[in-house]
Image 1 (cartoon, rainbow, N blue to C red):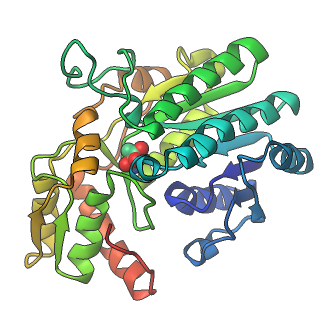
Image 2 (image 1 turned 45 degrees about the vertical axis):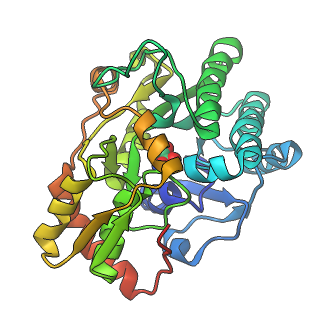
Length: 323
Ligand code: AKB
């Protein structure tokens, strides 16, 4: 199958490209920046693409003629609060441009990556715990606002133009790869700095609890949803869940493998505010029912797999900064 990825230089692209290439697909990873060295192993014919440039999106889609598109390009929550205009351009206009190209060129299927950031505390009180798919959406970030809009645009293009758009609301994703401006990054840095420095001061409180997922589960969710029969899907966008540990529970899990690692907590106002606005856990019953979604990794299984991978990544000289 001919598959095109936008935003392939990010954390999801790092693992998704390799999986698609290994499965024998003809993959075109695209991003604004050249292929990062961390993605060198993944394969595919890398192309430069700025999703905010409608003409460039149409031109590349016309050349590649993808049958399936994974739309990953996005400015995440924390970076989006620092530069809301950029977040609006990439997430809102970029999604519009990709949907328009899919409509005009009759792309078979589009996978949209939404996020728990679509949720926020409703005026009536706290979010239900766990939070189901259908609650009023009150995002507190520009990232969340544009993801809500992207979800609605997907449903609109599907109903109005027959574009087979479907998507997941991702929890915070954790993997041995460079994260990019997310509020959930504290969780990954507990592993990275736990390994390389033996210590990490988290920008979140010890009792912070949000939905998290290990990347192999996240990649599998995208592939399973992409291949699911349309007739079985009762929704356009699905909650998917795996685990919801508190920050200090992640520390305990990491210390099983790194007993000397020290974790301290110094909440930073903006990112803590974002984290507190998100659900503590997601109800993903619809995904489990419609397309058989089931996570494989709980917290300790993720830790056991991830710590050696982070070690290897650091030995290979990856340049990760602590945010
Ligand atoms: C972020 O922290 O902004 C992202 C997300 C949860 O969508 N990782």
